[in-house]
Length: 484
Ligand code: GLU
Image 1: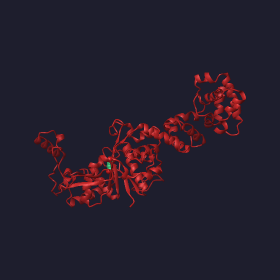
Image 2: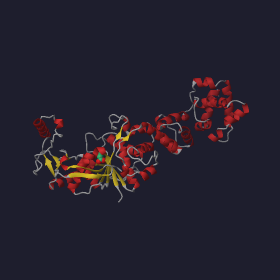
Image 3: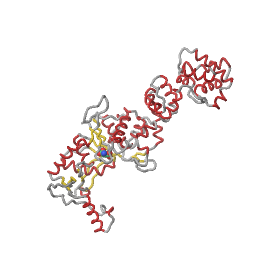
Image 4: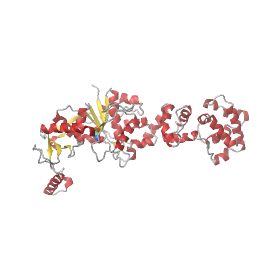
C-alpha cells in the first residue's frame, strides 16, 4: 500500500526548523514509496494563527522544494495546490462530535470556567497544597454533566467521555517501539470549545482519518496527545495510522531549539543568510537520522535512503559549523548555472538587478565558489563585476599603478584589444606573453591589471576576472586609470 503522510503545521509563527524537518522526513517517505504528501494547516487556534504565518510556511516549503500533492482545490496557474485548512471543515467536526454524543461517547459539558476553577481550588484546599500541584495529587476533573444528556440553551464544551477500565492504552511507535500507559491517566479531554471550534486532538484525528493518512510522523512532544488520539480512534472504530514520533532538535546550549531563544530556528533566517535550500535540507535530514557515515546527499539520495523506521531516538544537535560546511560543499558541487540562478535574488537585494544566468555569471560563480561560505558572501564578491567603473584603492594605486605599472597596463590593453575572443582561456596567457616580451616579473604585470580592473589587489585569476567584467567594462576601467 502506498503511504499517505502529512505535515500539519499550526500557523502561529515562522516555519520552524523542527517543522521543516518533520515536513522533509514525511515528504521523503512519500517520495520514496510513491505515496502522497498532504499539507494541512491547523488553524483552529484563532487567536494565534495569522495569514502571515501561513504565508511563511508556504514560502518556506516552496523554497525548500517540498511540494504537496493535493488540496481542496486545483493548483492556480501551474502553482502549488491550495493547502487544506481546518477552519474550512468546521461542519465535519460538528458532525462527528454529534455522532459521539449520540453514541454516549462524548457529552455536552455546561460547567463554566468559574465552576471549574472553583473545583480546582476546593481540591487544593482539601489537600492543603498549592493549585499547581493538584494534578500530581490525583485531581481529575469530573464533570457533573458527564452522564447527562439534556440540551440546555447555554454555552457548552463537548468533552470526550473516557471509559477508564484500568487497562493500558497505547500504540506501536516506529521510533520508540511500544508506548503505553494506564487509561486512567487520561481525562475527558475537550473535543469542541464553546465557540464550536475543535481542539487539536479532535481536529487532528478527524482529519487524519478523512485524509486516509497511513503514517503520522511528528515531533515527540506530541506523544502525550497520541494516547488521547488513540482513545478517539477506538471510540470511533477507525483504523489508527502508524505513528512515528521524532526526536527533538537541541540548540547548541543544550536547550530545545525554541522560537523564542534561537533565531536559527527560523527557516527564513537561513534563506536570508544565503544558505542554499538544498544545504539546509541536507543539514536537517541528519538531525536524528543517518545513513552510515554519509554527510552529503543529493535530493535523489535522500529519497532513496530515508526511511521512517531508521529515525533514531537521540535528539539532533544544531551545529552551525556543520551547516556552513554543508553549504560550502553544495556551493562548490552544484553546476554554476544552478548556483547562479540561486544567486539572483541575493544580487538583486544589493542592487545588482541586471544579472542573469549567462556565461558571465557562471564564470563568476566558478571563480568565487571555492571561497564563498554563503550566497550572501558570493553576491557581495560578485557585485563589483556588474558595476560601471570602480573606485581604485589609494594604497593599491600608489603601489601598483605608478609609471611602470601604467606602462604594463597600456601594453596589456593593446594585447587584449587584439584578442580574437573574450574568454578566460584567451585572456590568461597575455601576462606570460608580456613577461616574455619585456622581461618583467609576472606580478609586475598582473597586479596593475588587477588593481585597474577591480580596484584592489585580490581577485580570481586575471583571465576569469576580465572575462567576468567583459571587454567594454575592462577597457573602460583601464582607460580610467590610463587617462583615456
Ligand atoms: N498542528 C500541530 C503542530 O503544529 C500538528 C501536530 C501533528 O502533526 O499532529 O504541532
